[in-house]
Image (tube, rainbow, N blue to C red; front, side, top):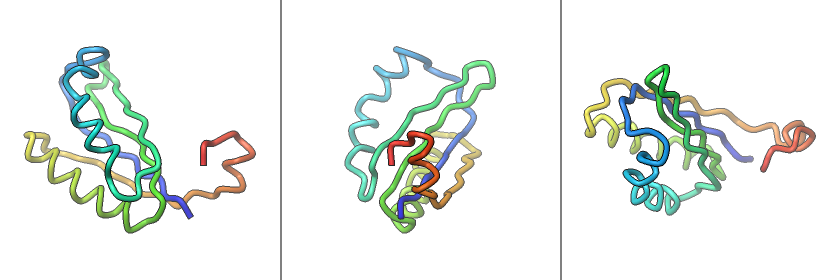
Amino acid sequence: MPYLLHVDFPYTGPWGTDMTSAMSELAHSIAAEPGLIWKIWTENREAGLAGGTYLFTDEASAQAYLAMHAARLKGFGIPTVNGTIFAVNEALSRIDRAPV
């Protein structure tokens, strides 16, 4: 069963294409994480938040990634990292065209 992880945290930029340039190397690193199926990067300039929604093959991979990523973000000076893991109901999600 796949597991969804949503992470968000306070962020002051860069945003948009500047974020793409600044975070490209990190994105390639994340792509190689064990159990990762995909990640959607999220940003909300008005709220001062950034983060992502990830789909992992299993709960253990999602838990391990959340622990590592929260520590990494705190190392970047981000004091608060919110992370929530959800089991995915694949049957219902497929009805609504989810890429699971």
